[in-house]
Length: 324
Image (cartoon, rainbow, N blue to C red; front, side):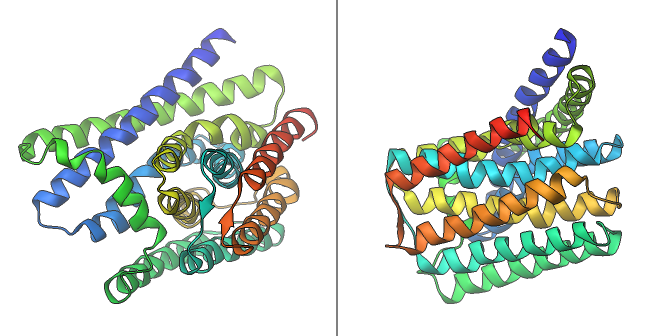
């Protein structure tokens, strides 16, 4: 068991560090190539910060463990919406712009409902996964157009980009391209290795302690791969940038559902475990509705509402371990 735990923890550390290097290297190369910060935010940063979840799910799907793959998708969104937003709102009550809330939050809610319906009926087919990826491309195109024509209402992905670039690019404005390329390559290698070790450790641990792979994905894997979003949102809240914290969560939720869910369905089509269909997805739908109610009432998430979100997360975490 100790070897499984060590492999799991090593995978977490390498995966998170690799994701950080991937974003840093890609953003610097893109800027040197003349890409705008908006385009970088909509593509490279949005993809890079979701890379840990993506690689973990892909490795799990390839290893024949769809429970971990889909549990990671649903569990990461639960962690984003309950744990991360709850913690950020406790630090500073979160002001919610109505545009991004209904556009980005609404898209995530609709995608979750569709995924639950498909999971309950036909299962995740390759066609369904392809459709999710097409919707993601459409969303990115619309978000880019909306940013160019309506600059006041920043989208979730753009806000996430600003928070990450702000702490990085000013330190290395003149960095050589070859060094940025090496950083990018190191990040890719670390993500691949970290994702593989993470899944291997999780599968072995699940078998040893008798916990289902879906529950491992909903809890351990989901929390670990959500650490980049956790750090970004908490720092943003501490600095008083509540819109960045909210945008980080909404953007990550969309990427998790459309990108990671789409790729997982394409690579490993088939039925989704009952723990996800009967418990994880209905809970995520209820969480998304609750979050939008909190945000719409007074256009802010208060500290006591943040405390409710945190309590709900730890409550479902205990239920996952004990009952599911």
